[in-house]
Amino acid sequence: MNQKIYNENEQALKEFLLDISCLDQLAEWSDSFNLFDVLKITRVEIRHSNMLAWLLDPNENHGLEKNVLEEFIRFAIVSGGCELSVFDLLKITYEDFCVYREWNHLDILAVSKQSKIVLCIENKIDSGEGYRQLERYRKWIYNAYPEYQKVLIYLSPDGREGNDALYWCSMSYQNVLEIIEKCYEKSNLSPEVSVLISNYLDVIRRDIVGDEKLAKICEEIYAKHKKALDLIFEYKPDRAMDIAHIFHKWLSEMTDKGELIADLETSTKTFIRFKTKTMSEILPDAENALSGWNTKNFYFYEIVNRGGYDYKMQFSVSSKNIPDDLRKICDRINEIFPAKMKKENWQWRNHFHTSKRKIDESIDEEELMKNLDADWLKIKEFEKKLKKELGLKE
Image 1 (cartoon, rainbow, N blue to C red):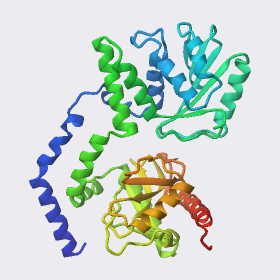
Image 2 (tube, rainbow, N blue to C red; image 1 turned 60 degrees about the vertical axis):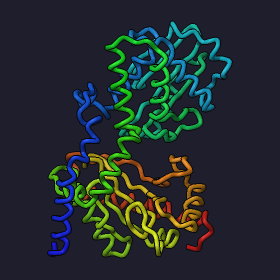
Image 3 (cartoon, helix red, strand yellow; image 1 turned 30 degrees about the horizontal axis):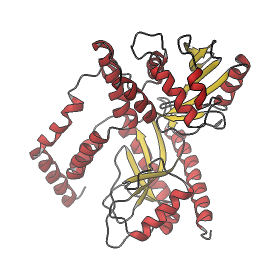
């Protein structure tokens, strides 16, 4: 590290320490008690399924009665993802629903013999869908309950479609949050149950969906002290940094081969960024504007390193200060590869990502490099399809 960079880093850390009180804004989240934090199960899939099964059971002691179950079925009907109609809602008898966990490997199964309805929820948080998993589950349900009307829901953090999307209704944890909040607010619950459900809603909002208020505060603190916080986070010794070093090595090797352009200046151990020649032709740099990354380019490919335990590659776009001509191109890209972000005043959008890959403790550098190479080929396929749809020459 040369002297100039060293001095800049030192000054950044000094400024952060002088403004350390800015972290007081985070006390609402960092100092508050949450049972799920204590038990360290905020993203444990099986625990979320247990909680949802409890809330869905009309005969359990939560005090929400049939409300959560009814809203889940209503969501599937409105989404057009089940065999029931809106009028069927009026005929359902909820009191005899039996809710099962891990019944023949199904995450959540709710069955009403009287109404002849079976609801199945396959819940995914950090794990991906197994090979033809939804198809196998659907066939089992259809064989086991031939005379029943089926409600099949594929639940994931972002509401992505499964491989058997024709039969399974896609549901996001944002939808779950809205349903439980609605039922929670209109019910008179015991103090113990109220605390538990309130804690659970906070966990969904903060750790799965994303708390907008928290995100905004963190974004403001980070924007003000980006350099200092990047340094602190970057040099914290942990598994994430060990894996990030391998990602950096892969990027450096691919840059040397001329395959892509690493941008380690904007990278952290969580987001390792790079550009490509093809995408830079589609979305060229702006001359007189800086993006949300404080760069002249308004896109990046990012290797998202989640604690060194899994990763994915994604294509991200920033709208901050974006010139009109580049915004039009982004809108056209969004028509071809629609992003989950639907707001017109969006700040960040992701139009493509590879499947999430787990990084087992036993994985070695060579195997991880091979996985990165395979994901790189998927990026090239994405760019090839995008160019074709945009009418650009190969």
